[in-house]
Image (tube, rainbow, N blue to C red; front, side, top):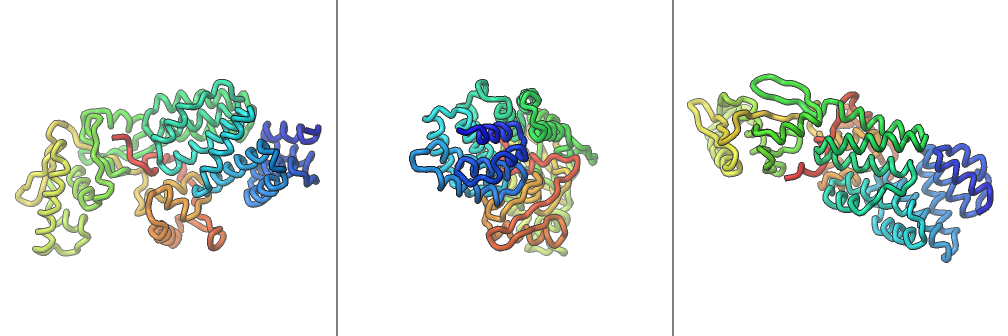
Length: 405
């Protein structure tokens, strides 16, 4: 490695892409192209960065497997930032293995971190947890320790284990300061602010208040019957049942929970659950069927009693019924939650993260675009969607994958 390449690599490691470009900006050999690609990625020109890295990978000879593997890892990071979640994960795993075999433990760990971050984005929390458990961050340089702890904090936050999340962010903050990379320090500070932001609204006994993730964690561990409108899940004393695929039943349950201990009229239930302006006998018959189904789903938690004017929720063990709602309720909450990270997403990546069809996501995006809540740029396969994050609100509870049951 010549002196200019070594100096450029040190500049990139310190978060100084312009310093790296000053040294290799006019060179077209494979090592210089690779470093230029990483520098352009740090400056935000992801398309140019990807082109340079692919060119560098082709320029390295077949015997330079280590250099090629590093290019693949750098391209994988660009794919993650640009939310190209369909990027071949096998290529990243293969490169990580090559790096490990050639003694490049640092870049191998970076490759594993990227894979865990991808798993978190698409809601595969168990796989992400297993991958994290196999990693030891102690021997890593400060910058990589900080990114590792950010991933640990992200998983703990999604699991609503807030003590672990705060401990991980404290370690990430120390490592980021040691690395002396401003962008990394800012990322950690942003994650810390998100923990203290309102994460949901608590509706109970006709009142409403904002709650943080710690409050949600305590609530779900309590003996209250919690109707989680963020995830469409019913919780009580550590047990839960999902109604994510039964929207009519969940709508009926939420209406009954918000009115508890009072009842809800049949006309109100029909209008809200079936979207009918006028309740006729067929709607009332359907309501009786759906209430029967709801009773079977809730048999371990509550009963639904008929009253003179409608129905009322009757908990079996809990002394309190509360509804956990999102801070700002929208028709397409989950799509907005993913876009709220400030990155640009393709409709295919959103569909993958939400485990739904691309056409359903596209309809949601078109509706949100008409109301000015999202915007797009590019055309065809290069079209991306984004929206500015909602100030002062964390959307963790709206992200894909159910809470642990």
